[in-house]
Amino acid sequence: VQLVESGGGLVQPGESLRLSCAAAGSIFAINTMGWYRQAPGKQRELVAAITSGGSTNYADSVKGRFTISRDNAKNTVNLQMNSLKPEDTAVYYCEAEIRPLYGMGYKDYWGQGTQVTVSS
Image (cartoon, rainbow, N blue to C red; front, top):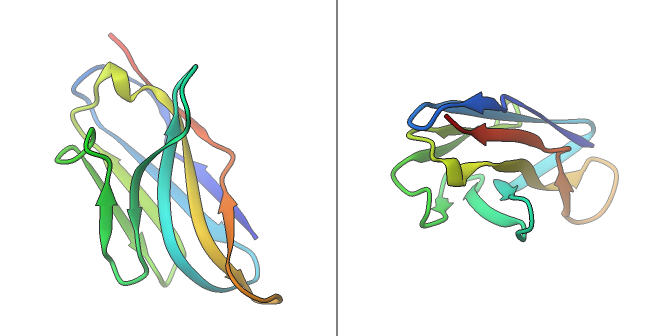
């Protein structure tokens, strides 16, 4: 099982980016999927999460600007980021609670991270 991210890059303040993450491999079920970020010198923090039923949770700093969505049939999760600010600059990581096809219980899986830089 692995998570593959795409969509990072360099944008100017006020612009938008869309991050995507696909879970691949022998998967029985996926519970919560989410996006975390880690800026230099700071701890990794939750940005947004979404359950298999579609309930969402956002960090206060991104509410109203970021939208998380998922496609359960395709095992994908997306993060639409609008009105980006310099303080959004970080490495963004996809995370998912996955029950592998061969195994017992759910485990946390992480993507490799994608850089988002917001700068003029």
